[in-house]
Length: 211
Image (cartoon, rainbow, N blue to C red; front, side, top):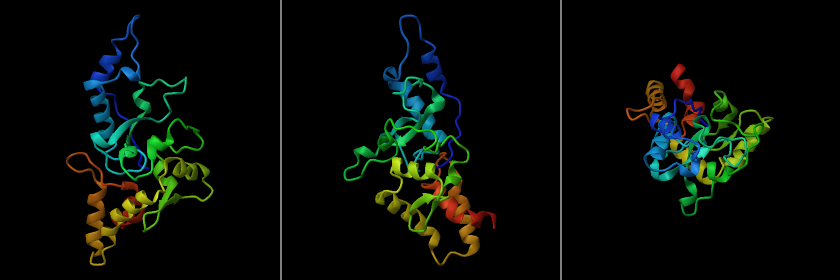
């Protein structure tokens, strides 16, 4: 899970909400068309086009707007941009179990759900060379429950992380080659995209950059 630093909401979204009057109050169900597209684009951009939970690549057709605190909760403003993320849309993939936002659903226990908004979220998880994820601290019940509730240890995701790791294990890479490879991977590209499973690569190979 990569830290997501929230930015300002899109102006078109702010302007749409400002149309509220005594006869009409905007709701999330009303959000559609260009307004919804603008919100989703902003979310994907601030996440570097990675799923807010599993960090696999997302695009407009394979993602959905995710309410971190479920909009079904009475005290949640469903149009609060600071509560919005973009999660992968995996329930549409044949043979792939639900995970991330679609598995989380309306479950929300703040003490047990690691938040992508927390700058320290990346340090709560550890990864193995074969793509598995686990709590950094074995006593961290929140990290363990987050992995379970979001399905982050599904075999499919483990395999995808292992595939991302494999090129960095190439024996022909010199120390300098590895350093440049890792450094380049951890930077956003010209389109603002981060490499898939950024936190996994940073955890396993980040020391090569600072060595």
